[in-house]
Length: 315
Image (cartoon, rainbow, N blue to C red; front, side):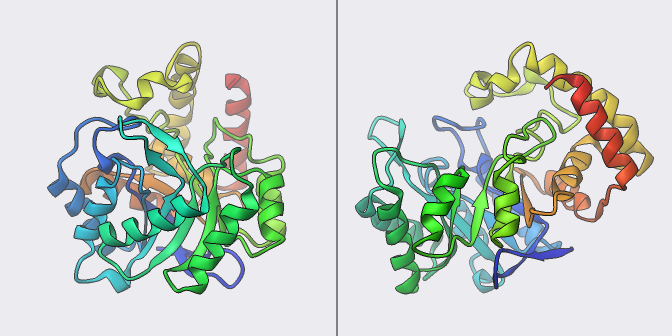
């Protein structure tokens, strides 16, 4: 699979990364029940078929995702680039709270190392901004963990330019993980250009808008406790507009023998700021379909055609 460099002097990552959010199982922002054996099989399929990195987080299933990832890569850990995140913790009642205090970050790092069954984390990221803690304090702790060798690279997720600038003043931000899809483009105006100019790698999550743009989405089939029931993208009037757009994109994808989901991934990867797209999978079949998007290159004519349809959809 094609690879791109993650930020200044960073590692080479495949343009598709395995997203391990859904395999965390039921929790506050879960995707319904999962089969751990299938999850392990999916991860191993990904690695055996060209994907060289996995994105997870301590909060996914409150540690369950990390445990599954650790189990899946046991025996070939050194061949896989593992990214995980800190800053969201269980309050004891099953509610995730943002906590970017230095003490919490350090404790979470130690716990993640244990769950992943590894001596180091390849990329450690602050999951969400915390207005209660000065970002300089949080970022300073991340840099210290890097100096100690517990993590190789440090990055952030869901940060704006102002926060990125504050971090960059005290130490390099290797990467940013923002949401980015054909119907979620708010990071295009300022954040992605800033990252491109400052050699900050970008690994986008939800390129298919949490499955909405997969071309196979059926709201009646998602689990009753799936977090998407509460998400505005999955409610009217946005839902109908998005599904209408999917039908208009389908013929464009079909011309290349691809699905709408693969088109959405290719569209995201077309942005010059992007290093990779994080695409979730719960089975090896889903993973195989995601991998096929890695060599799907859209022409400028197709990009223009897609953008016109997006604008007309009013999303």
